Image (tube, rainbow, N blue to C red):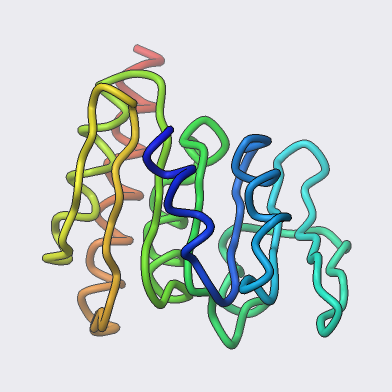
Length: 170
């Protein structure tokens, strides 16, 4: 986390924060090169914006429709895995649609780390990892995901999710 906190003053453009990331929020507030900050939090189930140029989106928000709210996209995404662990199929698809540069994912358990990392590896993205500090960075520069591939993986992820729920209940 210390390494990422040092990188935040170098970031510019728009940022999406998913989950409770207080230390990162404080650093972002000090960076004048960041034009827009979007905060998605499961506690209030809304997408709030902190910007002089954009409006706040406070109606019911669903992760499955993230690209509709962020039509212009965001440059960087910071995400707490605990906030999205129940929405992995939607998260992977939507986050790849809206991110222009990097995706930073923070996790607590190694199983979570390998699970989500494998989901992103299917798209042949460059992934920098740091297991000691419990995060990984996905570089989404110039990402090209075909709609067929996107639908295929989304379908597979949902089948896996259903299978896991059935096997857990047995």
